[in-house]
Image 1: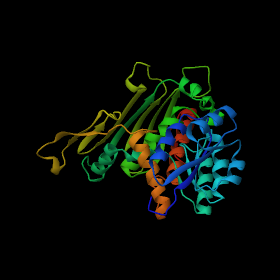
Image 2: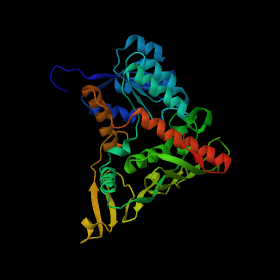
Image 3: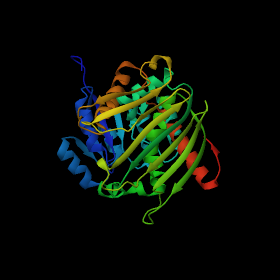
Image 4: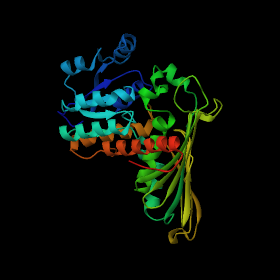
Length: 356
């Protein structure tokens, strides 16, 4: 922070989630932000958090808003509860960081976006993959024409072990009424947003199918979808909670884009490991080397999503300070959920469904 400038006060809303503790590391690493308070009705969760991080605790959002002059509300509530809390904060002039997917349906996300616009506050959500250096290079290559006209794309995001939500005080994630749904809501939105951004295009139609393998909860375990974009590309999505415990890091990730002149693919690694972007292109600038790789290696960064998470928080803080548009906006949150809802509708009706 510049000399004489105070850090922006951050209030965390909700602790029954996997990420608030990991976000503390990010906020502490960004000089422009300081978490001063937290609210959660669970006394044990709240008291433990306050003890560990030295912040003030409140049993209700109203109590925190009454006592704390907040600049930013970081909201980690069950998805169905996020809109009401976000709107309440926006009306007080508080900027909004609402954990993705921000609501249990697109209507809820739109409600937040409109409230933020009316209150003239910033609204963002954690689609942090846009900040990964490999994703940025992939987007640059696609936009520069390295693959020609995009025909197809593929995104796989599989993370195993739904019991992590039970262990992490967020069993509500397995209740459709509170979460909105399964992995397509919680994980798929990341890849939906990433491909919207890489392709610089909007989804217009979806064919989806959900697969349920566990009877202990009412969400699906796997979602599969073909997503048609306005310029003609079709994205194949494979989003899942069913990855074996033995799988490295418990996640199976893959991104690729194929066009009339080439193919680019990436299996995201983890910080401290080497990321490799594979490029095969007939474009003239690749004439001497049509097959090549680019290697990236990110040093481990503490906190949620590591380097990507840190850049996400820093970007939002800078947007507030400079009066600029954040990299991820409320419009992005609404767009991703509209695609998710089309996946569910298509799965129910067994046909292609329009987005929105």
